[in-house]
Length: 272
Image (cartoon, rainbow, N blue to C red; front, side):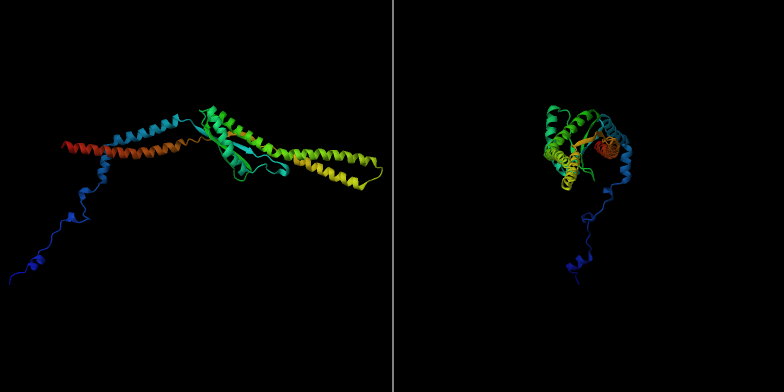
């Protein structure tokens, strides 16, 4: 009996090329760590020269760039009667950042374009004061001190104008009370006997005068107690720059060595 065509197709297996399968794996395409290490060893001069170049550039940068410091000036806010602050630290920060500092910096950049300084204001934690901060070199210390003092002068004048009406009122009240006290003393001396009403008025008036004097004495101007003080340590972070340069130099060195090995292998194959 003759074989049917279907019998031949069933009995003969179908051969599939492995390269047609998606997950085909060729060992020749494998990246060997040994080959990478060999390439790095062959190009070690490129690796170390690149790494050394980056480190040297970082050292030159550290040596060339002048050291900067943070200059701080603490502002003590003025007080008025009953030891109340003339203005709150939050309002002072808003006035400094939005009005006073931009105006002063604009003037300074016009008159002294080389001194490109900037000022930031903050409120130290758990205090009723304001802190001015400026970064600059030791050569800029005088300019920074002058800049901070200008800000303090403007702020002090503003607070003085704000508190002056209250102070004038208290001084006028003190003058009137002292004049009234003098008149009552005269009346008290004119009476031969004791007058309880006048005596009580004298006592109340004397207490009022003492309180008014105390209120006047509690007026203090806005000022800086210790002036402008630089930070002890520089803000350049030289050690951090050096550490980053070592890591960056290592990565660039490895990349340069691998690239140099790749170029050498391409030239070798082209020559063959």
